[in-house]
Image (cartoon, rainbow, N blue to C red; front, side, top):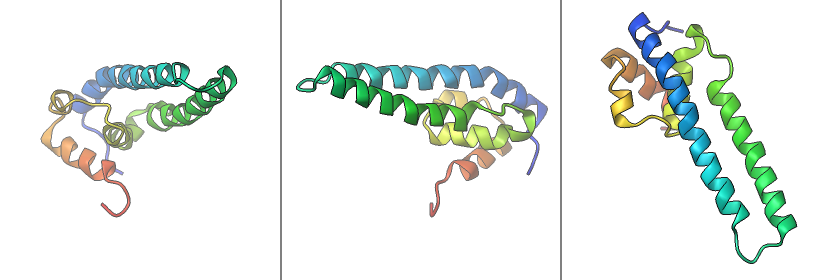
Length: 110
């Protein structure tokens, strides 16, 4: 696997925190929707919220655990695939790294 260039590593260190905040905002919005779901009992809403948090904890682990320079390119691709970078944020990376990000963010069969 290729190593991320120093300039892009610095960008990623900054955007890593931003992407985590983006994901947490999405999760909190989904949690609010589950909690406020009409026509569901309190217990049903609790169970739905619990399942949501379990699934989203796996996303957090996949995208944010093992934060090292040697895993940065794969993580950037994963975070991009999860929709956690704006176009403006992606533009901060070098063209070479953006090309690699596109490769890593493609799902199977893309």
